[in-house]
Length: 467
Image (cartoon, rainbow, N blue to C red; front, top):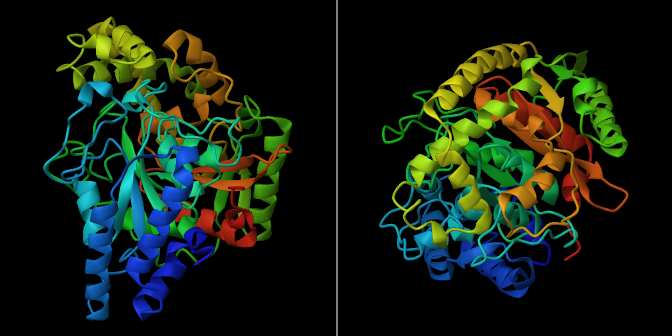
């Protein structure tokens, strides 16, 4: 069991299906590891020990009785603590929600449970899934080096996945919050097409921008997770009535003949020479595998559109928190209170203008993405030194996000397009590098094929943090 916590879901599934590995033993191993190590990494808000062991026992009985549900059956996972869980607190990093204990699981978790996944806990995050933390909550620690940022807002999912506390975690992404933690912690993160996964009973930040997706240590594992999570939900007004994607059957098909776009000038806006070198090595590897590297130029609006995100997101956040803000503003942390205060001052005209910009950009950006099978770019410039008080106000923390370069992530949220983050090397300081493969809507199968082919041709996914 020594290194079992770093195994991939595919290999574990075969051992579980064959009876060589007990879901109870695997779950107990993961719970013991969390107990031993998470005190220093602070990724978990709640460890769901009793539920996990009960679900593992049920899985074991089902599998031994011939009722094997598929590759997630008996696999321990964890979820960001803004996804509703029956009889377990769901706080979203918000002190104002103390005492919130849902009476049922969110649909996305219910689908994973139906696939046989086992919930080992709820994971810490920034307050309200924005950027800063509330002082009542722990800040997850980057397992590669505590002096570096662990990403936002799905920091707990990124840390827990990298540290081998779960085999997959659910995160949310409104401006990069799956892709930043994946980049920072050296794991795979998949932000799917908007509406592909139900957001019902998930605490919102910006309802028209929020996406739910998996963080894993293998691309194939992200594909397995998204297949199980995706599907129409009438309770979510943004949910797409679209066939559940087949992401796994052709994941081994390779990249021969696929066209991968790259804009060197766009990448160079924020990326270091070291990161650019890592990305060029990614492209060389894919080219050797038979892909065609296509030099492209992002639409000019890609940089200009950043200003439209703020009025849309802040106004939607104010609406989401209308029951507690501003009436209980003093219970919020410094950063998120500032964010909501700014949102309350946004005018309807500013929101309407931002939506007009967004709609025009989304059409142009999705058309651009459709010209290639995938577009290679950074997930952010990382790694970033954690030189900031993450409990501070919005103005003090803003320089961190200026350094993160949201122009690599936000366009995909505004356009509702998918983005896959994959580890691609290490800095001279031993911190992980990542590449993002973006694509047109519903191109997740292509993105996973490309990411998987690159992963199989390299060994970055076999490197684990020194904990």
